[in-house]
Length: 125
Image (cartoon, rainbow, N blue to C red; front, side, top):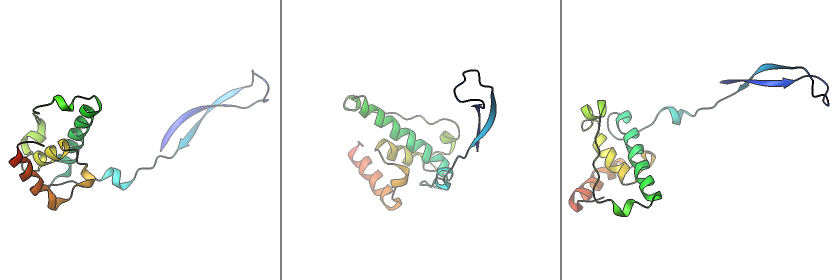
């Protein structure tokens, strides 16, 4: 729940000098279970969903700014726990999928490996 303070006027409706007081107003906040729990590729969705979204958003920004055609190469540097466990938790695969514009919700596990093989063989996304 989100609590806010709202000034409430309690007096005659036409008087600019009506007394006022504050009271708490409760605005219910709803959160879907799907917002709390994300399913991603690999054994740890926390190591795949975030990087995939970040990479996808980066590419979307490049496209929006008209810069994508001038990109010849990208280098993604992982830090912290992503750098330490990235390959074991499939962060590297999530990064490639995100750079290709794939949303975590759209990943079909059976298509990941064939897609990555195609990228490796072609040498480009």
